[in-house]
Image (tube, rainbow, N blue to C red; front, top):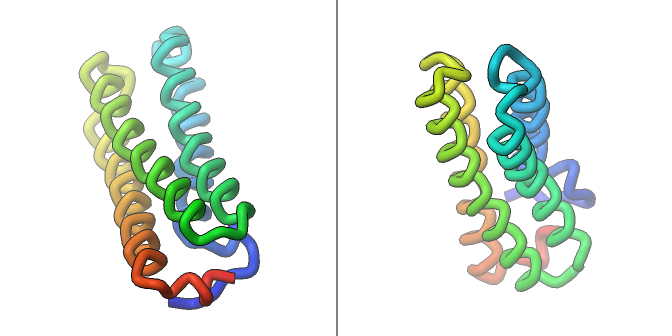
Length: 127
């Protein structure tokens, strides 16, 4: 695994940024934007992924970094669940659901891999 000097270099953070931008665009459309609760919760979950990666990285302690990565990973599951709700409410179609839920799942897997890597004591490489 390569080292990174900033959290912005972490591929999972970059993908989370992409997902966040796509979710913001999507939640501005059609009936979706009228569902304030779901829109807010979905946006917050996306924000949580990016923010927890950044906060954990900036703490400069591998164990804390892992803990914040776990929070971020949990938020990817929250995003997928909220996308299911959006699909059920017909705010999004099957294609949008698959595309975005696949991206959230990919981010979760990337975070899981980073967590395992750091837990195996490879943390000297993360900075």
